[in-house]
Image 1 (cartoon, rainbow, N blue to C red):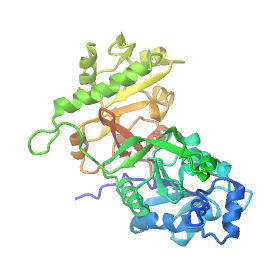
Image 2: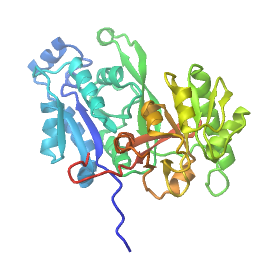
Image 3: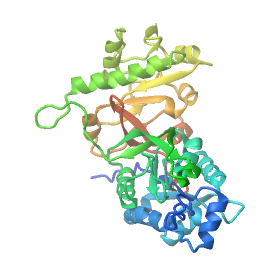
Length: 391
């Protein structure tokens, strides 16, 4: 039997630690926001425990650290831990002051996005979550390690160890759901005066352990028709929420089901373009697609070839490298049932656009719509790995 080539690239994990998170808790200071509070806590002998809590999470992936490349800020914001635990790491940011502030958290988050990490693991409290959310939004999945005094936000795992378990699942390429989670915070000044004023500041995407929440048949298998209806409802909602966008509908039976739910004639083995839930062009060529979509806001609806995992380059060559380069990765709406993903037996998805640079850019984790407001994370292979280019 021939040896199969390795399709997985190193998992690009962004690590961000707020080293001062939680230092006011044991001293009844009701939080750690603000220079004065942190200075007071330190003068009272407060211990910085955020690194220890982050270590508990990272301990779950030490055995697979050869599959991971960390991207960190200097010192106790991440580098100290990465070096001590023996991870391969890249330094992306260095704060000017020893006592880091919220702007250092945001600057690190921006640097991690610039390095196109697959996921950001951050340790802190609700203030840290707010800083990360301000920069990241829903652009990349995040996972919070609870280390602060205030943990109202749903972006945190229930314990540092729980964060590590979920993180390990994601890195190993297991099917992991991803959902929108609220970022909450309270006014610490009011809290210290006995008043609780919590409000939502935004949402971020968080990986969670897989839950089959769709309708199922006897025996625990997905009912494909009901699941496809859920997937279609999710896509239709996105179409309704983005009336200014063109939607490029790829080939395949899953996309065809979406078109049927819209009441639009579909080209099963071709590419159609719709807008305002109406057909704009049918069975377009690569050049026609470029002409239609140039200078237009676009989203691409794709599915995968069952059993093979190809999403680009097999049966949809109309989706040229020029077109794919013109849209952001988060404008690719990949749809599939979980049973279809399970049939891949853990093999990654494949992009074969004919453009090496584009293939590499599209590699890494992608969110796949598997039901109504139900998504999972799944890896796209980097088929162009070399000895010198492993990340």
